[in-house]
Length: 353
Image (cartoon, rainbow, N blue to C red; front, side):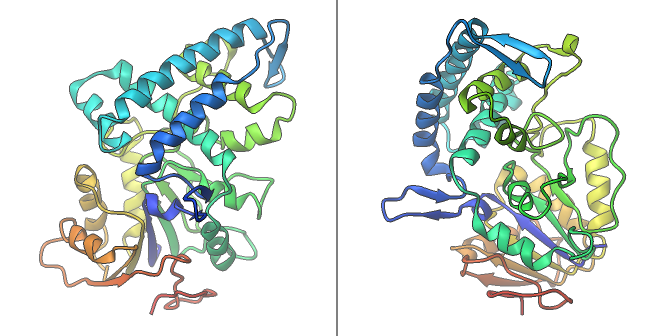
């Protein structure tokens, strides 16, 4: 269906930094995570929780200030455990993978839940990566405000940068994001381009929690984050709402695993071009990467847009089908996402040749 696939990694959400190295837009990379986690903890620690306060969530759930104070300590304890452990590992993904392999389900769920709350916070603190806005301005269909049918996105990111950017175009609806932890039935698939998140989303519902938080002007951000973490960490089914993290690593089993891969297969079977942006093809993702690339028998060219495209070009060889004659094109310019000039879409530099 989609002739061009955008294959996104963490570098696609890097954004910009000032001369002091502070994040101006986008998300922190691995080296910046420890300091950002520390800042997140300080933010939660400073949250004021007056005992006589009453907060109303979702229009009918009343929570007292005393309960919020207890929930605050619950989150702080979890943050402390996480930040001490991630310093012992190369990335949070590596730590999560280790917990998954040794069967430590309890800590594994803590990691995912804290990580979701942290990612929501950090994306509210910083402007989104502006390249997503430019990309959407170039490719969205003017009539449907959707991706054209010959462009789809496969993202390894669990951030909400695409969804945040899209709010400027259609604030009245949410983008359909296809990922394994969709609650309820697998959605009917649109005829337009599709967005897949193979690692799921750092959110607690089928719609963006970030959008919900930003539109809730009555309750402070810190209080909302504290309570969201409590929701996702406890059984709230008696309220008629059960929050569950939508972060689900590609190597993690899920009820929608087959639906996800079958839908990717149906979407990429005609793919001719891939634009890889900010993704390094790490070893523990390669089984899934190989499966996805195997679904594209017509693939003829892969663009590697990265500050070090040569290194990524070497890594991608491990996931390409044996004997394939696919041309690899390195693109070191990362100022904007590559735009497709081989099909009928507006373009901005740099562009696919």
